[in-house]
Length: 216
Image 1 (tube, rainbow, N blue to C red):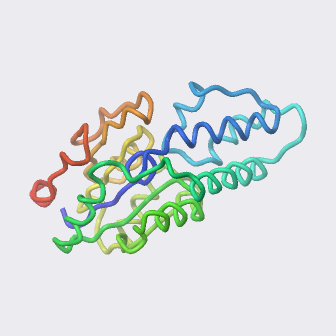
Image 2: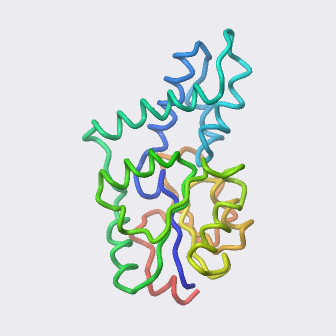
């Protein structure tokens, strides 16, 4: 393996439940009912995909983009103001190990570019990644494999030469359909996810050993 591609939500920061809360707050603002259980199937997918499916329940006219923008705004406010969100245990050490070994590292997230930038800036991680791609900028994000195909290409490698670290069913599907090797982090805060297609499952990011990645 020649490069590592990280997902962000649920892998870099423990934010899947926060995203769900912000989606529910957004739908409530526009008079659309939603529960935490309704959000589980959308873990790892873009806000656009989520709101596209729920827009049909609106009782007054509202555009999908209007809901997406509202959700991103309140999420960004939370990220910038909250002192209760941190990088996931083990991820900083893993990033530093990869850097020391000279292994190219990229980020491929379904999140909006502004959200990605806010998270990485908050924790001083912007320089850890040689390439960053937002699925919100693509015609289709995860589980579509394009996000990982394009990220691998930008790094100069085939997807088969890359390790993808994911926490969600949609992301694992995208990674495997792209042809990459996928390590699934079984994050208890990401809700029930089907990790069965992953090549390896870990219960902690500290269980990922860089020398093992290089040997795969």
